[in-house]
Image (cartoon, rainbow, N blue to C red):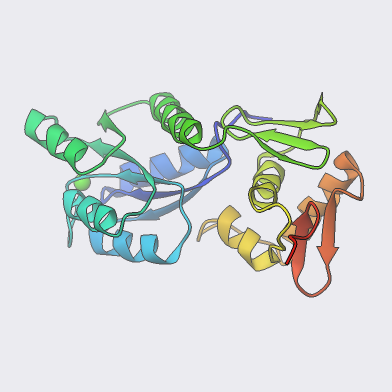
Length: 229
Ligand code: CA
């Protein structure tokens, strides 16, 4: 399995079709879920309606430029990591981006490996602000290092399986529906089989035992004991 720094859904905002397509393919290959839009106004709309953990933002964009997208985002106080990917290498632009709350910068052209390294670093910093590890019952999960333990034994799971566990463990004790999991795990263009989540859960139960993930009929899935009312 490829080690992704984080199981997460990214929004890529890039108006150049060649660069956008290349980045989307490259990042998907690395195990990330990537939605791609080509206009600033589309980016704002996508951010309002989808749960992303990281934004990859070009600055020179039609409709609304990247700086305006960033301002709109920060005004709504979204706790979202932002990496700016831009051809504008002038110092004033970089400083303005930092003032507006970007986490990092990458100047085009760059190698996909460089971008992945930056994404991992930014994700680690964000994970460091919060709790680094999640635990629920016999499970312990380290999002930044992409590691999972069952009763202190390392378990190898796929990127999607890891993402499902991470979502369930983040809200341990509450029921999460299949639709909520799908929304967080799959991007727009991605083929989602009608039973994709069920298949992942089935495989996880084979690896972790049947008791760890509970099915709440007609509602969804839960890890850990129900929250006390
Ligand atoms: Ca551009």
